[in-house]
Image (cartoon, rainbow, N blue to C red; front, side, top):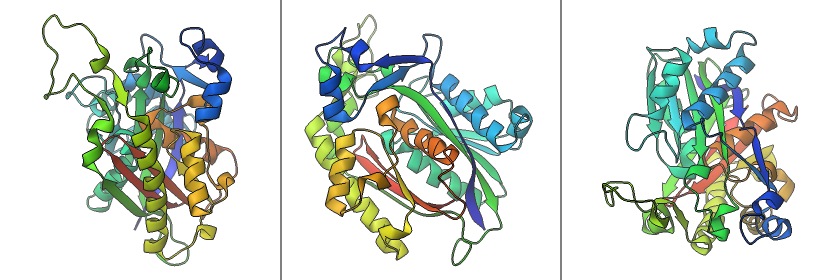
Length: 337
């Protein structure tokens, strides 16, 4: 019994902001942003769009890919909705997944959120896979959706150039394909890890139980995203290389067996450093951060959707996801397409 990805989808907001446009509001320029991050543009959700709206549209795109012209009907075959986001519609509750489940018109499906920052999609994929394996459920919708533009400090040049909004989705299905030997399919191995000692390297300081909002309080920088860039960079490079090495060793394979790597799209320099450390050709990594920037939980599923639709991804190809984020957390999946 295998848990296979049978469809992918994404939603990118229409408002596109280039580096040159951003340079009109803060002291920066296109050359600096590109040379330091590999980012050329980002997309922002409209004022009337929230994380659940982006997620819903990405879900419909995946459902349409699975059964063209029958997305709404196919939605009723979904048994489970697992959504991951760093910017949920509401703090704490209700789960954004429940809002998406209602928008899709599938009231009997279980729905919940997974919180693990930019490692969230890898975590949600493994969570949904495990729940399908151990129950009568057959199909799960896994979504990564974020509106980071809502929590970005637009006066902080070091961070505001990095982020954008987007949503990506995949549909998982339990099949009779083998998970070992010739013809194996699906999610075959996952690694998840964390280094909680670095929790303050990337966070939103106020708004939770430790530092709640107070009546009459105005928004300050403590209500917005903070990042220790150097600490995150050093952690990220090591997390990527360690995760990739462990996935290969545990599966008993080499990088030559992997068709493509879909990394978290945070910063091109991080990918380049990890590739150099591992001795892997940079072209092995599928990157789309130049157009979309860092969309947190959405980076891996949107990149996976673009790669799947490019025609380069073939049935039977072994691909690897790898990510890192606040927590500090990290992880990766090995998937046979």
